Length: 310
Ligand code: A2P
Image (cartoon, rainbow, N blue to C red; front, side, top):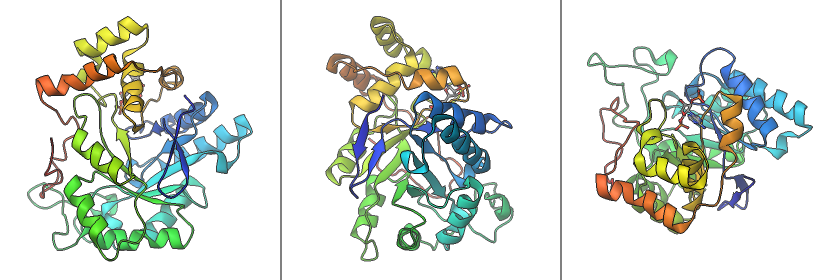
């Protein structure tokens, strides 16, 4: 698919991007990114916390060389980790160095919580309290983090900024803040037929913020791949279950970030089809009937992150 979305800053984002979370075996991220660009992907989603930005960067270089494309032809996102909320510019410098890039198309706040940069284990990015929960700065607001994040646009190191794992409540707080001058272009959240988040989707559409769906296939050990409704729709259309899930994400107007480290699956995940409204509605109906289910739980957080789920 070469489908794109127009963003609230006038830029354009390819609707399907390659996810790189959990592409952590040595060489996996590099090969996946290069294979994706060769297969036609023009959007790569990375993060400091995934621990593979260096490989993603080499993969981008290889993919561009193999296709004759230029840096400007692809959309690259990376994300600000919680231990750097006091200094996003410094964190982005590290990410750019690892990626081998001089700018990203989008720099995204990974979570609306700041982690203690001086906590036990902070150097790994995952400071912990004696309880085993993550060491979060309880007196710090993501509004302040976002104020700092905006500096990366002013310096030109990020073409745009976005947020991730933001609920409606947190988005409203962010957008209402006096210090928020640059609107986030995207809100990247878990989204698939078991967690469609229709209210969040409607709210983001009303604010012209694009929802980008992570774990669209349900990540590892996904129950979605065996779901009888999804399987039946795949069979009926003569496509794979993954192609149904990715096509549904596009049908409902979100960008989507399927992750794979297999060149064959990477290529097939780009071969989406136009879902009929009937099939789309049937997929929407799954969570109405069975209730919605978060497959990636933020159970590591001592504070509630998603307070207004449908
Ligand atoms: P692999 O990387 O070995 O291909 P999500 O995008 O929801 O995070 O899901 C990623 C998971 O789904 C990974 O385990 C990935 O495994 C697997 N996966 C990716 N593409 C497909 C596909 N087309 N069919 C089946 N499983 C897939």
